[in-house]
Each structure stands twice: as C-alpha cells, then as structure tokens.
Length: 283
Ligand code: AMP
View 1: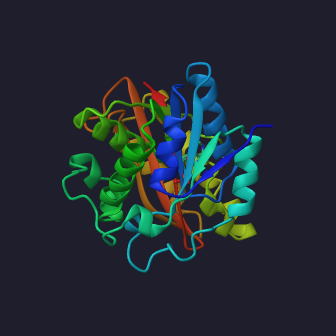
View 2: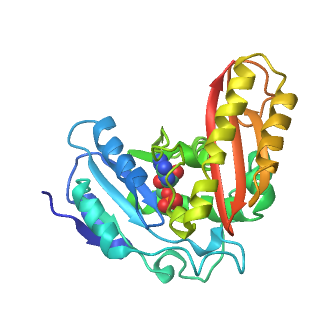
C-alpha cells in the first residue's frame, strides 16, 4: 500500500508537486467520502497516463454555501476519509484550513463569471453557489497545477461550468467527467445521503425512478414539455418530496433541447436534505 502524503499549506503542495516530473491528476472533494469518491480516485489513476500521481483535496468551501444553509451540518469524517484515500491508492491529499484558502477573508473572485449556465437549475435556487464553487476550484487548480482534473457527472452543472472556466481562461489542464456511482436501488451516492432518515432514504429512490421514467418517455417519442410534466406529476404524488426542478436540457445546458444527447436534471428536498441527480438520454 502506498504512502499518503498529507499536505496542509500551499508550500507543502508546491514542494510535493516539484518533487517529481510525473504528471498530476487532481480530484477535489468536500470530504465525507464514499464509494463514488473512491471511484473518482481510481478512475483518475486508470484514465491518466501511467505513472500519474493522484492528489485529492478535502475542503468544505464556505463560499459555495448560502448563509444559514447546511455548512455547519455538512458531514465531516476525516479519519475515515484518509483511510478511503489510502485504500484508493491516492498519493497525496491537500487539507487546507479556511485561512489557507481565504487569507483575505471569505471573498469570492468576482472576475469569474458563471454566465448564463450559472443562472439556471442549481444557480437559480442557490444564488452565489457557482461563483463560490468556481472561485475555490480556480484556486485549487492554481495550487495543485494538475495535468488532469476529474469531476463527477453527478454534479453535472458544476462539471459543465468547470470545463467552461478552464476553456475561457485557457488553463493548462484537461477536465474529465466521471460517470455517477449509484446504490443498487438507483440512488446516486452523495455525502448528504448520510443525513437522510431511513424512510427518507426509501423515498429518495423516487428521484432516479423519475429520471428513468422521463428518459423512457422521451425515447418513446413524447414531447419534452409533456415528459417533464409527467415526471413532475409523478414526484408531486410522493408525500415528503419537495421538488425544486425537473428539467430537460441540451447536453451543453445552453442550446434549445431537441434531438441528440439530452440531460434530465432533478433537485428535490427530502427530510430537509437537498438531493440532486441527472442522467443523459439519447433521442
Ligand atoms: P463533493 O465532495 O460532493 O464536492 O464531490 C467531490 C467530487 O466527487 C465531485 O466531482 C462530485 O461530482 C464527485 N461525486 C460525488 N458523488 C459522486 C457519485 N455518486 N459518483 C461519482 N462522482 C461523485
């Protein structure tokens, strides 16, 4: 089993980076790691050129949480996280303090504009979320200087926005999307699932069920608006699910959705826990 280097400061990361010429792959997380994260780490190693060193980060980024929202109650399980990273064969983990990431206080980089994609779906319901997310990802990319960075499709809008930022700012890193890891009942793994009660956990299975239902309706030739409506009606019937959105978009989240690859995206609140999920469908 390899040695996991624990890095806490920017200087720690830079000296780790400079200690080898081998390529670097970075996977950024907020901790409370689960098998979905482990898959991301393994995927990063296997999909990158042989010898690539994998660096993970664990940082619960305050600027992407709304005030009074779930920042304080976000699960933190550092000892278990380190064990998972060792088992996944990760080479180093960057665990900065808030002061390391925000030496001038909790200010975001206003020059990074999430643009139109930042205003829909999660961006509409969580104002400021994507500016905070992109600000911290930009910093993490500057600090870790990876050749590759891996992001889960689970957070599809985040993945799309990170790809766009890297493209717009001509950052020398390849952003790679990784398929969503699900429980056998279909529920996408998420750190927030830990906060669900047993009954809410069962109720949450309706989210992937609704995605599959809408996907099948589209494949069967239903109009997008009609498929969206039937999906929303299905979830509205489930007591205890507060649907935020169920929408079908083009894969790039910009164009008018028509034919080709589409994305069905859902956000809902169950038991006070925000659950997001999405799948692709080919029509
Ligand atoms: P988080 O710790 O929730 O910020 O997630 C860190 C990274 O893991 C992000 O790129 C997520 O999209 C990804 N991720 C989270 N859950 C899953 C999952 N179930 N399958 C694949 N990737 C995931």
